[in-house]
Image (cartoon, rainbow, N blue to C red; front, side):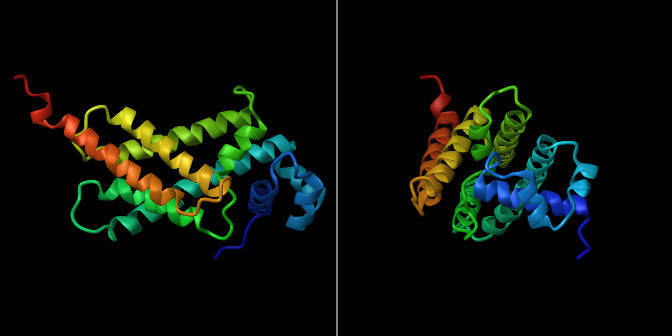
Length: 203
């Protein structure tokens, strides 16, 4: 493994603290102390805490999407049978593994958007972009299926996933992602049936 740069070290430290303790609840001095760098080093890389927050969220966005795609590939091969839904259902298995991780503290982007509710705030803008990226990824997973209104379905499945994430964390429902997966399967079956030639044929 290549040695971390000071910038990477600061971002990873900030990400861990922001995720565990909240962005507004984590001061610059705490980040500097945990990262083991001088204050001057931080300001050599970031003009302000806000700039560090944005860089940290961008890093988490890339990290999360890479993790998600890796887990989907892993769980797709473990699905039972040869269902056309295997790939999209693997998405919910990926969410389940993540929500069961010992370090899981909810979605960093949901948490951050709650701390920065102004829709024009750069932090909120990044959070919104991340959620759109996840929804777009779901739409990609749906693309091999012959389903009408796949864009609308991808939004519905993204809402299910977010509901599972929130309930796994806030309501302490450990099988929230598994429940969401069952609901997703029903939605997929309904969408497929509605898209079938028989359902659209005129009498």
